[in-house]
Image 1 (cartoon, rainbow, N blue to C red):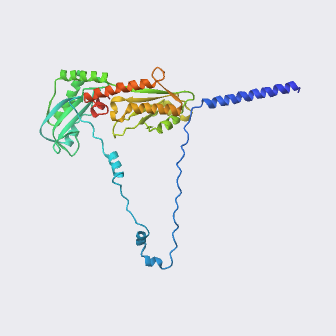
Image 2: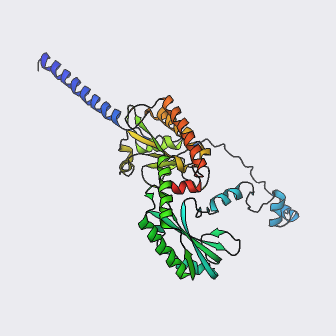
Image 3: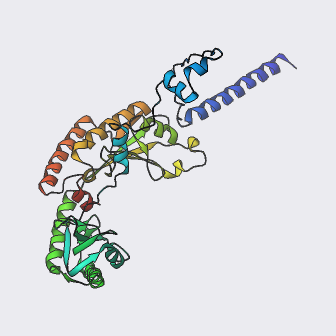
Length: 370
């Protein structure tokens, strides 16, 4: 083999090695960022003194076994700390009281009774479905014990009932067909409990429903920010890890995380969503995400939670930690001035909802904007 052939072979080998190296580098560069293992917090070693050897006969002088425990150290029975554990237990075990019917957003039919009706009889008379078309239908009883309207329950006694259907929600206003269905359901309940139902005028209630729907449609607000990867894509685990560091937890469906509120039973403050198929992949760490969405359902979250401020803070924090950029629906970066303008508009919206007794995050507000 000549010197030329050897030189060509060496050059060819170097070129081939360069191609392989570049291909390997490119493939590694295009892999999505993965979650890194969290370092466990260091634990201080605990030292316990070795038990001393008792001299013969010393145990008899000290007393029997159970009395030794009292002398060596005070023995405590397990108990709850009333300031911490009991408070937390009460918070998570006390059922949330569902919002009742309200003349402001419900069409109500009074059911007069000649005799007291048991809770068991009322439950047996309930319709099979609690919907009238696309609107919630409800029944409340006037408790003989406390004199308050409540959802019928076993072991209770009621002197009157009222049936209601919601006038409007995000599906639209109550129409005449839905009102007629409401009358049929309410009348069937009244007949079953031996009562007499009194209904408001249909045209008046339908007109109220349209007015409420117009107001709600004009003052509904659902905001979202899109966070796009600047260079390297992200894996679902990488997104979940970074979002978890600022308070997000896994949602009820794949590809969704939520930032819980401070009040039990309320809607989450923020939502974070990404491709559900990527979250359900056999190996999610090999799937690539280039965008995630932060969302805020304004009427569902109390004003006191400062949801928009927290949305902006979360978007900025995630963009910094994951090397991303915040963009709008058209793909344009969102400047700080735009966020401040949105915040000013939201304050006016909150004031308007407060003036209509449909405050953001309130029971009535959550029902209408659902």
